[in-house]
Image (cartoon, rainbow, N blue to C red; front, side, top):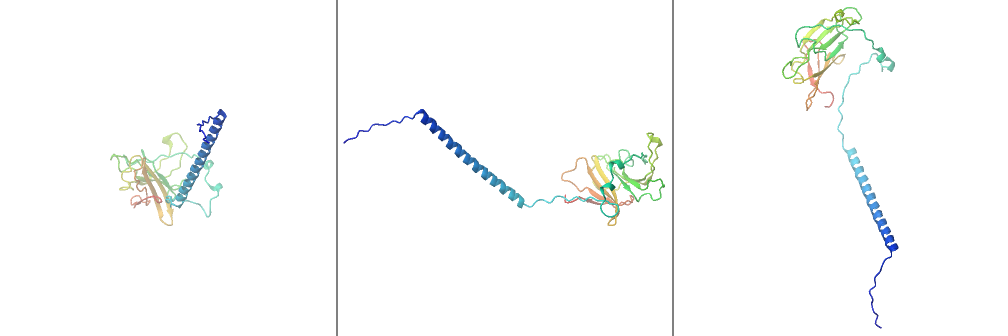
Length: 246
């Protein structure tokens, strides 16, 4: 028996097309979710490897800064023994001496100052012992005043609380201006930044520690610290050094 073949054309109903579209979208969302999870997993895995690598990488050693700690008496100073804002009292002022024209003057000076408790041993018994080392007129750039920031030592007269400057006591030179840093810190003269600290320890004896920079430091940086003897006529400056591993 011969069977006759007829072409069969399938026509989908609207409900069937919506159902197929729904299942197609579910597949797409499912595949997208799987891909997203995989990407998140590999991203976290890569981040974990990066952190692990960083933790195994040797870190650069941070520069160590050494600061002097001064304590009075044995043991640790209790908080109640430390200087508090309420302990400070304004006692007055005194005038500085003057020597000559710049740089041997305190005009445009006073950048650095330090107290010497051993200074002026023969001074007046007025309740203000010791002396001050003070820097004079600043160095100035471009060759205008390369020998500034000289250091002098003065006594400490009794301060007076007066608005009349002429009524104030005037200090006197114990050691006149000396260019203690001559030949050092060359080029650091554009708005200098200078600090001094008098320290008398058993390891070094009395020394004036000196820090020197300028408003905008050079790059690469240069050594910025030194010390010199309190005898300003023979300061015997030693340095220059960095602080820590710079």
